[in-house]
Structure formats: C-alpha cells, structure tokens
Image (cartoon, rainbow, N blue to C red):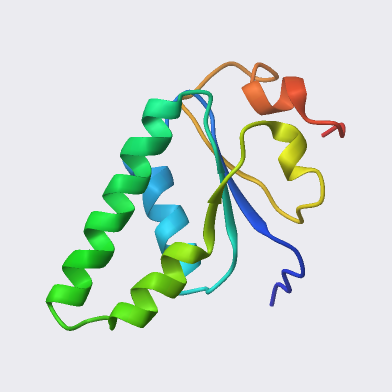
Length: 114
C-alpha cells in the first residue's frame, strides 16, 4: 500500500504523450490523487488537458460518470510551470522518449541525487 500525503505529480519530458495523459487521468479519476503536470511545451499541456476534458465528457455522455465526478477528477489535475513547483511531492512519474542513461531532462534538473 502506498500513502500519498502530498500532491502526486506526473512529469512529462519532451512531450505530454497519450501515455502521460492517460496516467494523469487514471490517477485523478480512479486513484483520486492530486496530479501536477509539467511539460516544457505549453502547446503539449493544452493538447493533453483538452484530451482529458474530451475523455471525461465522453464518459459523462455514456453514463459512466456524473458531471460532478468528472469535475472533481479534472479539478485534481493542476499544471506547474517549472520543476520548483514539484519540490514537496512524494512521487514523480516521468513519461519521456528513451534516452541514454543519465540524460533524463528531470535528472539534470531535479534537486536530489538518484
């Protein structure tokens, strides 16, 4: 069992992929944990949030969720502009394209050593 006492961030490296968007949505909707999104591209954040909104609306339309459940899930997802906004989190999930060991965008900026 994992206890998450502070926000649970989802970090997206080069782009907010469908995988990252799915992780964020499942975390907010089913695990009911706060999610922090970060991407270097504002456009990718906009596209990812639009996809989340579309998927939630689709589930409401099919009767799988109520409007309230969809809103509560969406409200759990926040965007942070920089890595400093993730200082007090308990867990980071980085979704990125494969890169060589030690060359992760997060590893180079994160304030702790792995």
